[in-house]
Length: 338
Image (cartoon, rainbow, N blue to C red; front, side, top):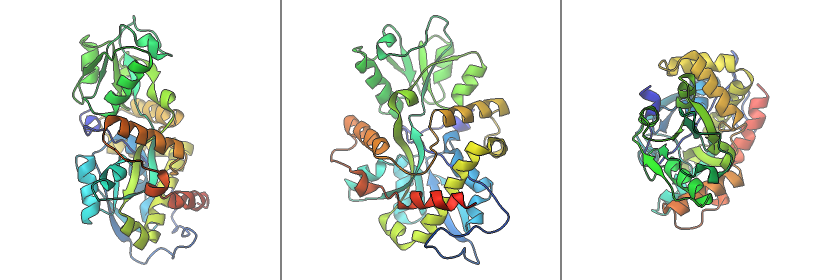
């Protein structure tokens, strides 16, 4: 389980997928036919996360290749390092917390979000205790302790916010990545806030899901595909091909999960098939994996509000300044043709 527990301190989760054919895809409207030689691009990510499923499906199902792209995925270890890779030109795209482009802009390093990868808060409250009942209101957290990833992670910030909305002083036990479930089993906390596929692994081992932050917070821009404004402008055709492949991946995951699961199993061999299936079904059902790559105003504003509340972002960050949805909108039409 070590591989899918690696997370950055400030959570930046994100994900994608596609549908495949043998013949080259028709180009998105306004783009040239696929080049005779694939265009080499690098996509940087903070780490290997199951929630980035669309990205891995797009690559392993051959969807990027179908659109004339030779894609390499590199791991940086954090959002700041991912953005540094994009700025330096060692990566053309970054998969990370989309609000980081606004945070970086305050340091004079602006970016553009060209696609939504993870569109909901991907945390569920789980417990092994029969004494903990299902929680529908924040006030029901009274007298309970919750284990989360360390402050200032998104998990910690949102869990503390949930406590306060129930007029309860936050009772949070911070745990390093990979320790939440062991803490629950040891009785160090009543509830643990976890990600998939850890949630499905825990329920497979006897835990129960007692609440969902995805249901509580709705659309939330957690992970996006980012690029420098200059690259997005000068290489619009490459951006269009990349987003089309990712939209096809999302469609494949939703309509033909039986084809996506074997691809993810090869990426994450430590996750059993039943656990992977349960995890994929949950992230689709709860809207964590979006239907399209379009970043909604609600999702963006919710994420920006959290960053401002945490003190990471100080100025206003309007969607129109930092998000270019034109590629995601064209990707819907492009994917529908295949």
